[in-house]
Structure formats: C-alpha cells, structure tokens
Image (cartoon, rainbow, N blue to C red; front, side, top):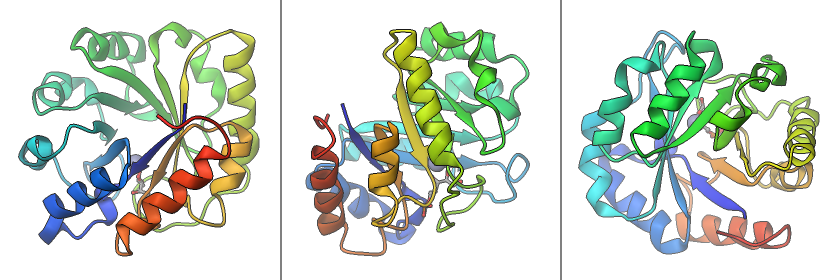
Length: 222
Ligand code: DX5
Ligand code: ZN
C-alpha cells in the first residue's frame, strides 16, 4: 500500500492548520511532522504544543519523525500529543531495542530512521520491532535539499531484505522527493513518500493529487 506524507516543515506556519486541512482534503493519508532539537540536527523546528494544537484538525495519521538525541526521554509525551507513528533515529539512540518496544507499548507504530551513511545492518536484530523504516534520502535537518542518488540502491536493498524475510514493513523515504525523483523511489520499492517543499508553498491540492496519481501507477494507495 502506498501513502503520501506531506511534511509540514515546508508549510506556512502562520496558516498551519489551514495547510494541514488542505493536505487532508486533497487525500494525503499521513501528515509528516519533523521534530528537531538543535543537537542531533542543527535546526530546531517544533514540538509537542504545536502537535497537540493541530491534532484535532484532522483524523489523518500523524507521522512524527524525531530528529532528536535520546528520543527515549519523550515517548510518553509524543503518544499523549497524538502521534500515530513515532520514528526515532538509529544514530540518536543507544537503546534501540528497548525504545522501539516502548513506542509500541504506547500504542503507536514504531519507525526507525537511518541517515544516508548508516548501513542497513543496524536492522539485523530489530526486524520484529519495526513497523516502518525511514530511509533519509538527504542528510536530515533541512527541507529543500537534493535527493542523494546512492539512496536508490539502498531502498532496493531494503525492499529485498523485507521481502526475503516475508515481513510487512513500510519503507518511508524522506528528502528531495519531487517530480524528478518520485518514480525512482517508487520503482526501488519505497511505499511511504514524504514530500515537503514539493507540496507546500505550492498549490497543495494540485500537488497532492498529482503525486497520488503517480503512486497509483505503482500499486494501491492507502
Ligand atoms: C528533513 C526532514 C524532511 C523535510 C523534507 O530533515 O526530515 O521531512 O521536511 O523536505 P523536502 O521534501 O523539501 O526535501
Ligand atoms: Zn522528516
């Protein structure tokens, strides 16, 4: 199943609610929310109060991407403010096994994000703990960067590993997804597509429709 996850990092924050509602009405299944701490990544974005404030505006899945060090400190808080999928970075957390369990214990789906240079072998003893793997296709921290071409092979390798093991794990790609790269990542096997600058700051409805139409060519949409 394919899902589109517009990243609100590129939204007009003065009209955040309106922008989320527009992405929802256009058919985007997920709302991708990037939380940055100024430590794991250079930038600081938004946190729990903003997520809580927009939670009542939509029933869509809140796909929360934590780019923060020691994310285990905040699992309960993100559950409480309405995250449906909580994704932590392999590079930012020493106790991945325990933290992924803690995310599921709070009733959320557990996601594991990997920076471009992090090998897939980090998943070796975690296959049964993850619902989604987020492959960063740019270095995390900022929107509007260029897709790293070497990531196409990584997506395909991960899809093959999931298939070989007969697992049902989503592959989310994040960074530089736009008209020029969307087909590449879908062909490689990604099924959850984050798009920030390619959706917001433009005609959101038109962009969401266009991407959902392309995604339909590669499989059912969620
Ligand atoms: C970057 C964030 C992304 C960002 C993507 O660190 O994780 O979700 O919003 O932005 P675009 O789609 O503009 O590359
Ligand atoms: Zn993200």
